[in-house]
Length: 348
Picture (tube, rainbow, N blue to C red):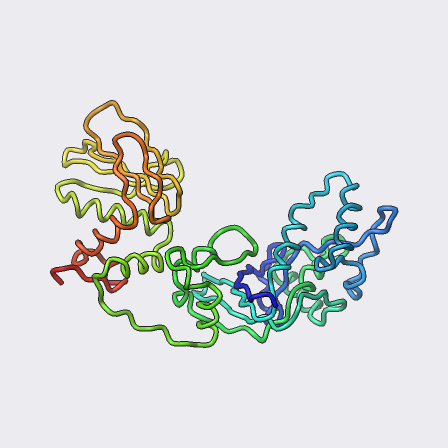
């Protein structure tokens, strides 16, 4: 039997927040439905009351492969997204936990999959879904856009539970803020015994989160960094640590569009640049900063994961997770994030 997989889904087909329909139907749906074709290449008539007849089920291998070949005869057809959906669907099994993020509400909605993948021929929520689109002043031409087909294929869940977004550790939250419409979660990047599925299952079951005890243990601090940091907050933390290391200098976080790859900039009291820093939340090889021919400017390459990235050539100092954790402990009394993570230093 296939092990349950934890995954996320945005629940926003063709530009509309459709969680209300997902919740009402007690289902999680994935888009990109593939319309069935006859042998001569003509499409089956689209019928939102018989969707199981006019759509191709991605779980039936021989039928899917044959239908993809027929579609490839159509100029401009791109099979990548359809095959991506199919490969994703094959990973999901009964017991899997789905997360639907709504960061603007400070929430996520969790559901447990209780059925195999299926296509619902005549969705009872079709009219409600079209009304939802109409209320949002979005396209409602179902004959051309096949909107109802977006909410007919997927898995039944045993209801959704609202959970505060903050109850998900950062190593899970990071996956929710990208552009992908769906995807699976990776396990804890430092501790392979902590799986995404087990963590989300515990949250779904309402297990209480253990109260963090104050610590100055290096390995525990490294875990807490992973559980609390995202890309931007990592950049800010490194800049703060460099500021605390060099109190006679002025350090700024500079990351953003047009930053030229520089995320931190240090200067003396006269405005002369003393150091530059580039941060990568994840990079197998530490970033290479530009060679500088003017002045004595220090260069720092900060990498949080993996724990031991490949070093870089040249006069650049590598700031890895061990350095970050050590300095977080050392400067805990003056670092707000240390309070958040309940990290104390030797003098606290």
